[in-house]
Length: 214
Image (tube, rainbow, N blue to C red; front, top):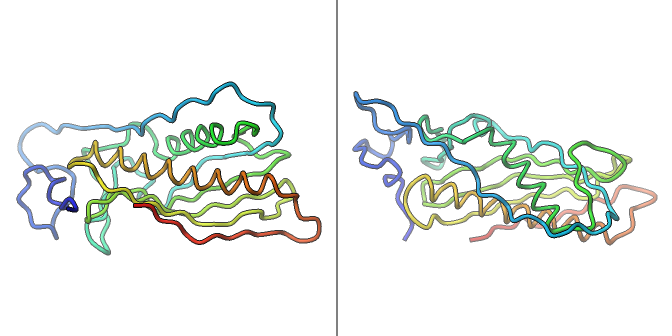
């Protein structure tokens, strides 16, 4: 059964339409909780680099750029927690984990942080949040270009993961899983393109159907 949104409030008695997910208001001291995404398993000894892939910083949409963990409390309303925060800038965490995942999945590729002579991956994250139906969702779009600026891949990702239990720790773990699946999807597309010769006459934009994992 889907976890109801009210479980996140831990005792608040406000109606769902008035929930803020910032913790119950009281006269006591404010307690902050900070969360980090789980680390990605480290890669084995790297293979000789046959390819170069630049992965600059992941870009976040709207309120995702703030410190508070975001919850979608209805089909149209988003709210950011004030007491349950990311331990460090979220975009930096997502970038680091994406780079580590790609290095693990593409051992013959050198992952750089700045564009150079190889391909460049840009990622825009539009959703990275809990949802009122008890799901964690990561979605957005990404593009891979070659050194000449030609688009090799342009695609979207969307992955949802159900929370194993109530509370923000479970939400953060589910978001981490959703991001790992997104990274795996991106890695698989890049690996396929690396095995295909670059176009010589016109950009070869490859588009795939949006995926969603339960």
